[in-house]
Length: 545
Ligand code: UDP
Image 1 (cartoon, helix red, strand yellow):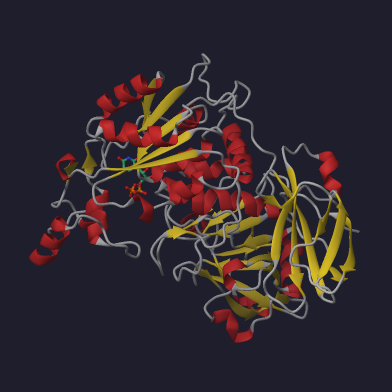
Image 2 (tube, protein in one colour):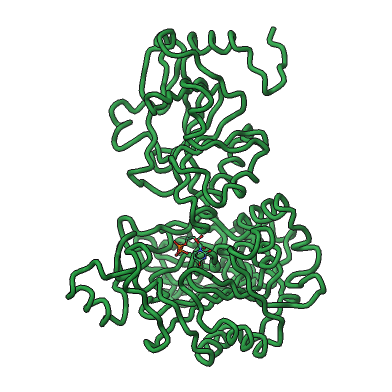
């Protein structure tokens, strides 16, 4: 009988025996390589080959069983970036007996989550591509708990913000290079491979110019569950208890997030003063260089407004309280509508942030750096004509990721912010003023179907007829507070595409307009909460006059 072993001990002989007999067992979710996450038992990794190994035995299991489609183009994406050809996962197949000719395996006792980070030097990428997807992949599979071991296979060193990855689990994450020091053959009795993409909202422009993802599936509620967890792990407490938008002393304030290396705001002191004066609020600056990440989160999570140049530091608007304002500043010739990761974030349903984009339109207020290396926006390596064209251009044309020199040249400019124009832009959005205290958030719950829908037809002479339709309120209405309940009724003549829509406040109505005798009508009814929460249609009614 199996004894309950403490979780982290492995009976080496038993583990080896089981691997030889049972081989690798894989069961995946997802229909295509871009939405697949796989659970493995008995997956191995050969440091020498730099490959994962699938061991075949009589008891091994591979679902989906793709045959050669496993290479078209891969089993799955190892990072949360969709279908990126440097991020594919596959394994090498071997008979389990080959284990006898391989170095003795080292078994990883914890349940592992094996993924790629996409760009662990950039804070936006860290949160959007890695931390949020890791957090929600761990919530999808209950054995990926606080004892799970994260393993990053992309090949980078730990990176500047490794401490953020360490918050997700009590076990220190491992990067690929560290696996070497553990042994030459590693085997995972339990491992998940891949990353859920359900929380990502932006695509970076690998196949079409960057923009919001086509089918966004995350809302502010899930973002806040994540940030609450994260703030707690960072020991930043009281982001809610103290009342929204208040500092320790209770007063509201504005945060200007500055960059200190490049893409500078050249008149930051003037900007701080102007904001403080305009909104009658204390205004503070933060930067990644001068503040710990915990301090940044502490400040941002109680701020009424966050002002910053476009850039990865704006991902910290994840932590803003509901009702806060995000002000994103764009350098000369960079069109805000073409670069919207932070606008899209602020606009997620229930994120409840207000968003303002401001662009420098005055060439005399920009400082360019043509002599810098290409990756910091330098252009002197280009031929003369191309340099000249870029210098003359008033807007960077839409482009693909990631090395467009005109884009890099423009995005790494410094900017002297034109204060009157910025204030005017902000006023346009913040009409009712800053201030977070008083907002009421709608519940956002959708109505269920209306019940007991019926219709009765009557004919009045040769040309007139009526349809009397009635229904009961949706079942869930008695449990939710709703400001406004309305019903939508569509009347469609059978066989026609067009229909007549009506918005009604009562639960019955007699339709006489445009109703013909001796005709069959389809009647569709649904409930609407608070103007825009449209419920499902009840089963269609068929009424013949
Ligand atoms: N960064 C910073 N201060 C600077 C410049 C960059 O903290 O003066 C950070 C930035 O927030 C990001 C990383 O360094 O996390 C890389 O910046 P880069 O300009 O390459 O990317 P971007 O901000 O445009 O996404």
